[in-house]
Image (cartoon, rainbow, N blue to C red):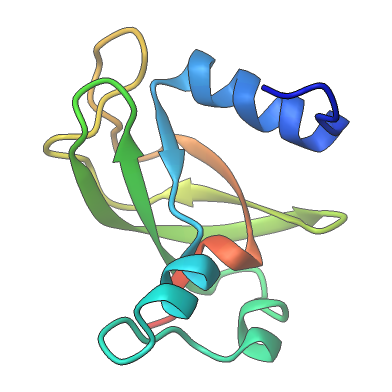
Amino acid sequence: MGMKTTIREFFHWLSFKRMGYHLEDAEERHRNCSLSFDIPPKVVREDMAVGQIAKLIFIDNLHGGSERMRVEIGGRRKDQYVGTLIDSAIAVRSRDGHVLSHGKEIVFLAKNICDTR
């Protein structure tokens, strides 16, 4: 981390180290691969309602694997969504070595949503 790290970047780095996984920035991936990686419009991703399903890409920080999994939105905290994992991971693990499983609370941003179907 550089000298001009923002508080948000610091907490992102801290959670990256603590959780064992992180969520893909779908907006950035779309910018880099717009012909092969399509995402819903920003207005759709920013206006998700309780009960809707968001698909996120989870990346294992320790082993490098990744998985797309569904999260049911349960609420919001400012610009963050709070949801419950519907799927169970096959490859992505938390820092303690346990696979991410159905029912885990996931906090994410609109930029992490890669699909809404």
